[in-house]
Length: 194
Image 1 (cartoon, rainbow, N blue to C red):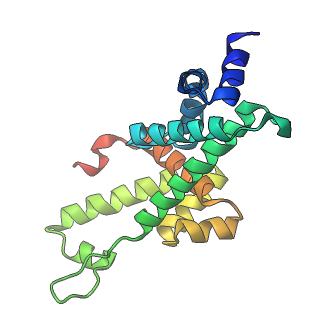
Image 2 (spheres, rainbow, N blue to C red; image 1 turned 45 degrees about the horizontal axis):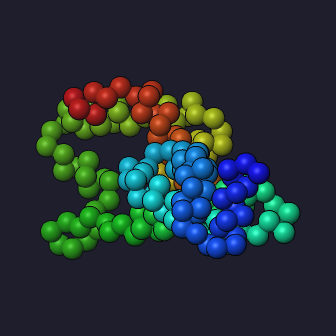
């Protein structure tokens, strides 16, 4: 009997914390690999990793080998489900943005912002920058470009885009983040800092 079998047997028989902790350390790589695949651009990765570890512990506690599924398969499904919920919660939070208002209380649209820029040179720089970004978006792969166009030119929510493209919200969220990564590499940093 190897160490892994010993710890599984011990855990199923006695629910010993030492065996559960050993199993958690043994399978921790599943949490990291799943997080890197599903949420590669998150800023608070430590919180996300902690949620993944808690889900891994729950998977260890609820795993039933009699169902014929390998533990790694079961654990990855649990962790992906948890991360999918985190992405959905984040997306809903992002979509609840409040529009900016002018001094009369009316919502500000982009034409108002352009009209109230301090000087015409800044308007030209902004227009050139927008055209440059638009050209870079056009160079994206079609499945990525359609997300950016629907999200930022047609101003649709991630939920709307997901239903239109018959994809999950986390999948659309991932495509959007992939676009940002590509655009960050393509667009010079000083473009908007002139």
